[in-house]
Image (cartoon, rainbow, N blue to C red; front, side, top):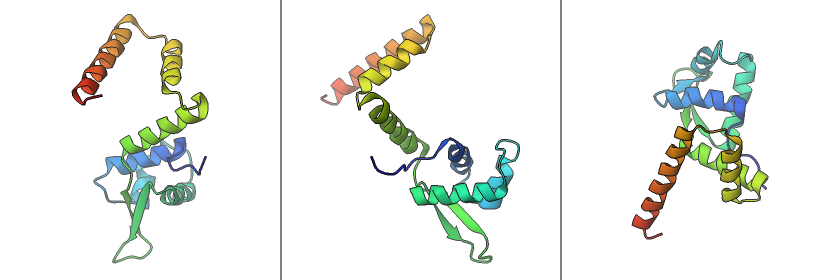
Length: 135
């Protein structure tokens, strides 16, 4: 299948901090932002940052004034990561059949009548958008 290239659940919490930053954040700032939200050590957060670097989700630059400080930047947007996770999930658990995946979620979701109406409207809008694109 190839190696994982999207954030794990714990890594996702780190990514939320990076995505919410102005595009330039240090490890110390990430660690501060996660205090009280993620019950892991600063060292573990640094290990997770290295995993995210290896996955190509973020990149870093060494500070010009202090070589011990790294600045982290987003490579993949939240939307790109979600799309990759969804595709992998459908491939791994539903044999690539997205219809089966969606049907399974709907059956198990216990949607209210209002939520079901919203879903129907979304499907209709998607159909209209596809017609407009010649699909």
